[in-house]
Length: 101
Image (cartoon, rainbow, N blue to C red; front, side):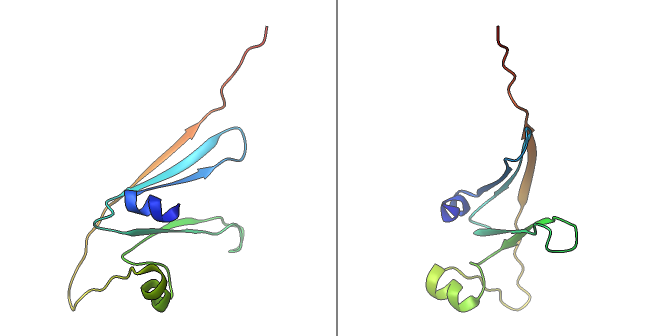
C-alpha cells in the first residue's frame, strides 16, 4: 500500500484518537521525487512528539537493500542539483452531531 501511495504522489497521515480527526496530507510529483519518508517519534526523544517529512530520491536505507529489494536508488553527479516540491495540507474533521427525538 505504501508503494501505491508513493507512485500516486499523495501520502495521508491521520490521527484517529479523540473526537477531532486531524490529518496531514503530503502531495508531490512522483516523477521528481519517488519517495517521501515520514519519521514519527512517539515520545522517545524527551517529551516531544515530532513528525518530520524526509523527501528522498531512493528507497529506505541501507543502500544494498534499496538496490536489491526495492530497485530504487538515486544518484547525483558532481555539482548536479535536483529540485522538487512537497505541498502539505493540514485538516481536521469534527464529529457529526445527531439529534434524537
